[in-house]
Image 1: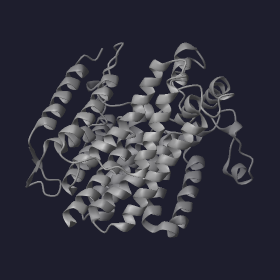
Image 2: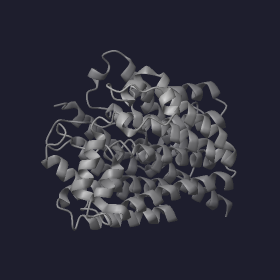
Image 3: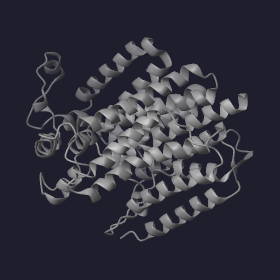
Image 4: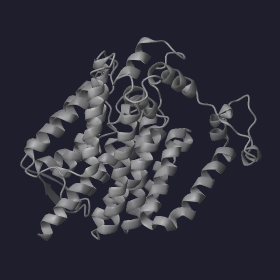
Length: 432
């Protein structure tokens, strides 16, 4: 039952709380490893929380430690905002997030399964609390870089464990599933690419960029491949604006060619009994009937028929999808919809989906504007990383359970956004 993960969780929780309540913790500087930087308690707590998002501590018990860990992290964020002497930074996108949280919480009232609804609410609450805590805890580039590089190091360790034979069996359940890790690597890929552009350590961060881009192709996870293409397109759009369109178009063409020229990706993309060629695609003869969805499309159609039709505006209530899948044996016992967009529509209707989409786009636009308004390099780095990774991870919601993995997926772009807000506030305070 992976009892060791309980001890790992307890040790992790102890150090998070110890760091939070500490007057200061000395750590190596992310800029010069021969130097040490004194971080205050909330800063140190934030660094360890953000750096360890990939740790799941999964157990096979009735109450999984992963769920307890999510709740514990939310409590730490709330307590941290009381401990820190700095105020959280509020923005229009975060107010839109509040509106979305209120809407899905209201959805618990008319939900057929309010307990499941509360669980869904907590998964969406977590990235919001991470953003607020980061905006209050972070004021300096050292904190941002320490947290970001820490998360990158943890991602690289998880990558090494994956490629070393028999290594995964030595750490059962410690890291998140490969599907969740692949989504996490999208944010790490963007951070590495950003640091490649903005630091002198070109070879190091080019290596990390390649490392974090590779797994989604090797594992042939189409959602993460889509997210990676969207993220790199958003990255260059932020940098070059309209001039990036030819480059983005080339990414689009490269993605299409990859589907048809990489055998493993082609075989997973299309049904085995259908012959699909690039020439057919060029003639417009390829349809969704040719695409292998692994019962995803059938699941989505079934859920929409049962929970969306007739409830298009407000949905069937927060948690309705989870309750339905847990109590009905459909398509071999599917327990998750493999599309957060479908789940939002079925649970909270068009209003819920519209609120979430608008909030994410508002964050991206805020990051885009910040990148061009502020000349301070750490703020530009955080804005570029937050904006591009936000859209990349958001794209995976189309066909992945990204919200279920929010500790290691959504926490990354929202955490970067929160750190961006905190550094903007810190820069304003230093200029006053």
